[in-house]
Length: 458
Image (tube, rainbow, N blue to C red; front, top):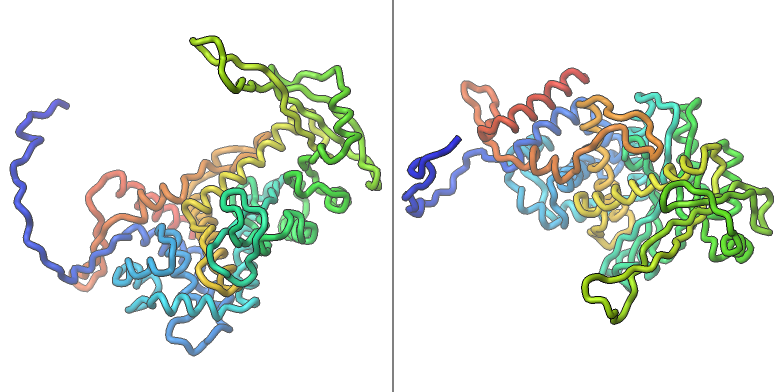
């Protein structure tokens, strides 16, 4: 609809008189959605059981402080000192059951006083919630992805060490190992480690533990595992095969001259697509006890010529090949194996969102257990946002070749901007507590739709 100029422009530019009053305004009116969701899953009660042994006589219960950390991450805050920005928010106080939020020193002290038992029990709670979801789905096939991610710091935190750090060379870091569920896009478990260890350090026991946890809730399901070349070893491959787990693992073929020579001497490659070809063989390194299926893949790629060229209109390209090798015990055809294995790239998307939106790369204190608990708060915030979306909407996909998530998830940052970070006002007309949002149809429809879905879920 075309508008007149007078209906668009305004001459009113006077500077307003300023007043500061207690109007019970909140910057996070969308938290009412999380308040209903947490009641639905009984989150606060379950947290209390995990942390009740920590300073039971303190004014601020430890499970309440941990819940504040989860909300702190969900709302987009990073450092502990950022808690001062929402110190007087009435809806956040109400959600935590407090009249006064703790200061930064209280939160920091809680992290420093955290012990191994608290970390272990919170980790178990995170696992239980993810396992409950996949048990409810009743899937016949579950895919686990394993990989590590670096947490860097400029400080000398307990347990950090200088190790492989692609972006911040020489920085001290942690190097936790993660297990994610491909079908739900959630983090099932994490193994916290110092930054100077190899990817495979402690990996075998961790992998088998995750497999057993999934098998305990879905005994008849087919379990699949995908990993990169850091986990390629006789022990891990044999253990997975003996546990009847289907796997695909990248192979560091440069370390094996015999395997490398097979690739170099190969003349006949079978086509998978226009630019991808393959051959496969049953092979084993000399020290291994048994043979496995090895799939050699080459991809035709453009290689730009460096240096000066004589042609002025375009840069010429020379074509070459990139090679990769996959070891697997799957019985799929070559194309199915390649697409399945390439699907593990979705885990990198999970790590990217955890770092950009859930502050996974932040190390708040010098104590190791405190840093582990903050990491679990970040992972819990991420898992809960995904669990909320799975609770209020139906599955949108079946099982795909690449094992994509069964839901098309909105990112944490999107949920934060469109729902959580919306202004509101708390009032009590005639004694009835009312939360008033700004008048926006899309916001109204979205919030009511979520609350109705959560009411149905209970």
